Length: 195
Image (cartoon, rainbow, N blue to C red; front, side):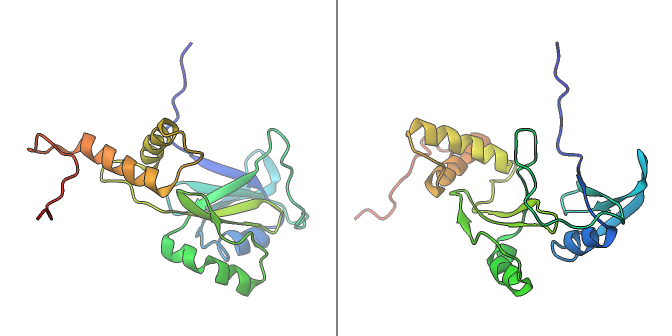
């Protein structure tokens, strides 16, 4: 038996209500350009809208004009989508509460996740949306996932409850030391301010 190795998310398709509700939310609230539309090739009564979230992937929505928005929370039983998280810059994240409030969109307020900050709210159809901003930038040549894996290892070795900024800082240092060479035989911390 062999795996079918994936290399990223190709796209996520959601069932929407009418066309304009999708455009108004995905482009008008979240800023994702509406880049493509065609019929749903498996169901002619539906339209298939494509939005660009900014990372080269796509969010697509099946819409049908007879469907109306229902703001009740979408199901969260096993097999259902709990929420979708989107990355935002620190600058955008710092404006999120104000921008949601000015639209009258109820939200969770800022949540401290140790390695990132998050805020949650629902779309017009009850799907929980998370906007997340990392608290760190990975060192050159590494991904956020690699830093989190290293931080996880450090956290577990120290028997700490959850990843915190100290684990991230130490993970970034460890990854940098492994990837970047030095002429120094001893690369440990030093004190050049000795008397």
